[in-house]
Image: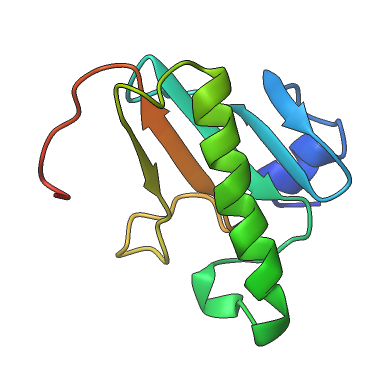
Length: 113
């Protein structure tokens, strides 16, 4: 397996996992941009947003709802947080496996509005 996130899911690479079920995994980013920086991924290998199909609509909804639940568990929901998904190299996607960044725990820059 070449995909680092798939290797984390397989247990080949250690991660600080905060959530896991049959469909998703969430773990701390190894290069956090804020006090809370968790990556939420589908266990299914989907390269990017561009690889989504209509049948993934429910999966994406559940991915976002899981991130919201984790924001509450991390006690950042009241103060605010950011959810971000990068797509492709020029979009800033580093790992070619669909993932959502949950970032919070401090005032974030306003560049995204």
